[in-house]
Amino acid sequence: MKHYLLTLCILFAAGMSLNSQDITINPGGEKNWFLHLESGIMYPSGTIKDNIAIRQNISSYYVNQSSDGEISSETAGFNLGLKCEYFLPRFNTGVSAGLRYTGYNSDISGYSASNADFFYLRYSMMSSDTKFARVINITETNNFISIPLEIRVVPIHYMDFGLFFKAGAEFSRFNIKKKTNINFQDESMEEYEDDILENITLPTNKNYSTLYGSIGVQYGMPNKTNYLFEIFLPSYYLSDNNFALTNVDYFQGFKFSVQIPLN
Image (cartoon, rainbow, N blue to C red):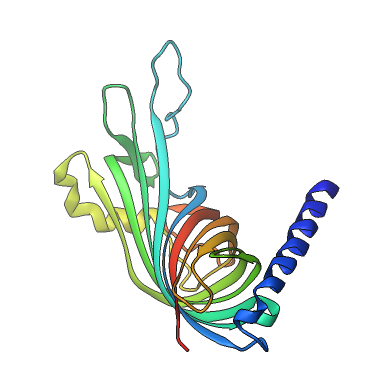
């Protein structure tokens, strides 16, 4: 850990030294305004909610090269954003805010046996009467409009290349599209879809917020159009219960953006 902190300190000191060579590009530490156009991919990590009652004998453990069944869940997201950044070259730091559209798609799929492309979903249990539906997959869509707030530090900028660190948070009360669907093995079950969804899903949180950090590189001359690529460090959801099918804890991913000078 001590070696890790020492390496970071050396890199930061080297970055400040390299930036001092370029200070004549913008004497006096003038303030710059930039427009950022961004697009990214997110990979949340989580588990299927307990109220999604998949038949209990589903197992992913293999015996004699065969399996009783297997269930998998996956959630992925993408975002598009527009931000305005106020950058202070004297401190190699910028602060930005804007609007971001984020779309999530979740999917639960699996099979109950090696020769069956469906799993059993329990949707009713009254006394001794338990009802199951044969399901190929369950999908969920969530689309949020959020306000991101970010701070970006560029400790190293040499020639046309720069290294930056970013910390940010986003907040939303606008889920512009939320929909859950069941793909039944038996098409005749589709008329009961709404009733089954009402039994297996619970209301979700209208608020959506995240806290994230990233490390990235940028390419381009100072005060010209730059291209940025960044990788999300393990980042967290501040709001809970945003998804009907899964409990998500954190996410990772990457983002590409274009930085355009406004002055």
